[in-house]
Length: 194
Image 1: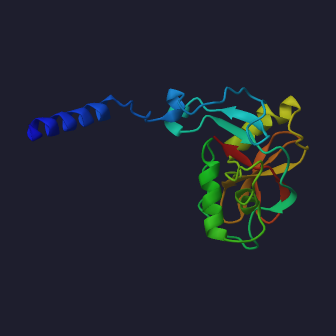
Image 2 (image 1 turned 45 degrees about the vertical axis):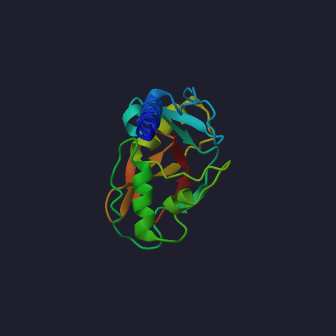
Image 3 (image 1 turned 60 degrees about the vertical axis):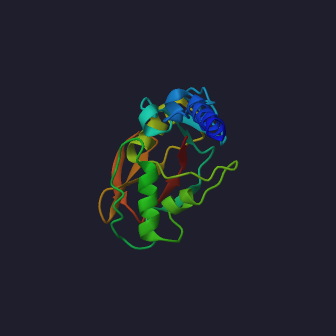
């Protein structure tokens, strides 16, 4: 009798475990956690504007990119006082976060563009980073050229490094992106992905 009861209990437990729905492997792709239905230039959860919607959200794990509601600086250097290579050479969309982490890891504490973004908290969100070259271009195309976001006709730093002495900046007056001296002071606008 004890053996029958034990078998029934174990069988019941196994059935209850297998009957539970499995959490989705990718919450973005399944819609499980995607509570947002945003379009370009909509206001994001941190109060900034959506400038990019990721067509690869199911594999990348994030769907939107949001630019901060305002500039973090109007006069900030890319480097932390000395020229060095940080390894932050990626330019494509989705690489700004890793670039920023590489820059901060290499340069440490101080006052420079990537660190300013990395330390930023807005509306309770602290996952900001300095955009990559292509991310910065999306900001220019989808926000600046549409007359939203309060961007000025001046240079904005990206997190994309060219070499020891130069990093990419975009001129928001005419849209040209070039490598420039890391010691020069330009505007900074942080972004986040979610």
